[in-house]
Image (cartoon, rainbow, N blue to C red; front, side, top):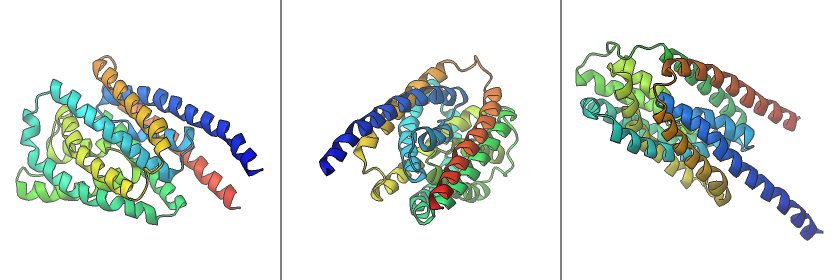
Length: 288
């Protein structure tokens, strides 16, 4: 009887894996295109897909999203580095290193913090953070190309401030599985007076070690032990994201980035409420 049940489950599991493979790639490409158009990775939009459409639990979705983010950031750095001047980025290096210093600290402990939270607490935190990021996208859509820095140019101000901002960025990254560009870019623009293009490149430099630390920490806690998920979700989603980012980069200038950011900020808030409200409702029904 046991063998018959196992045999009956095999086609169902196989069809689920095939479905996840197809949807992972199909969703990743347009999200990557949008990310490429506005200079972001799109991880915020992948998280609702992972936790909603693909049916992963939030605890699985976050590290999987982080893994895809790592692939996307590495590819984006190569693409962006070959097309943009790094002269302005070099001037920001002290700030970039201070942001990295703070971010890797909280990224290191973020996985442990997430593990101590209940599913309901983690879902609520993720919902709040996604809404905040959605609002940040809308605000960023109205930013001018460059504004005066809020902080004085002295490194005695900028380095401690960078570390403090980095602590918040690393925590957001590890709890959501995102690169954090939506937080890093406004920080660089508002606090340090970077122009939007320079901030976009600098955010990738900050995100790479931050996400890498998060991936290593989640991996050490067994988050990537499911090899099937690596093949049918993370790999196709990573490939789709890179393809989409390349296409998006080629289309820059056709659609106003500011309009896209405002639109995507609204969409992110709506999708976050729909997915994570549904998750919470499902959990409550299960408990009752």
